[in-house]
Image 1 (cartoon, rainbow, N blue to C red):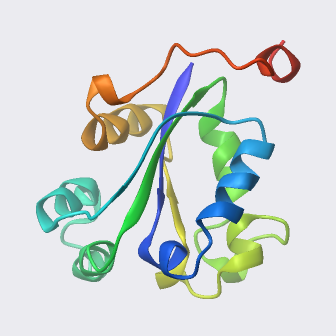
Image 2 (image 1 turned 60 degrees about the vertical axis):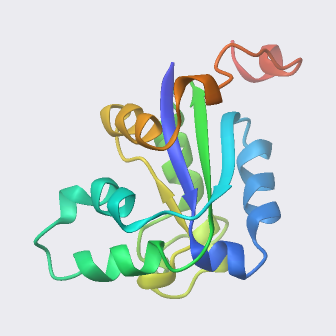
Length: 150
């Protein structure tokens, strides 16, 4: 089972898109194992975006993600990294296909609504960065799991 971190960024929260985005993720069959509304501080933001440190857009990423509340979500399941990324759409909303979250709701790359882990390794690291083990309900079973997974 893979784990992925999803962040509904400040623009998603401010625009009232938490519900519609969560609906799309759940309708896809994704299993949420942790979720919280929080304010990311600068230290956590710099750790999360550390791979981009030194790039010209790094300070803007940090400034934006700390600018308002976010919803962080841990997701677990078979192949969830690619499934989430397909559901979210291309990083630049101008290139995101219609029917994806970014393709339907976002306009600019700097306000693209959502972060999703890009690899299984990053998913594990990002989930651990935002959630304590006791905050995750990894072992819970949904009655629909047998209808989603073979």
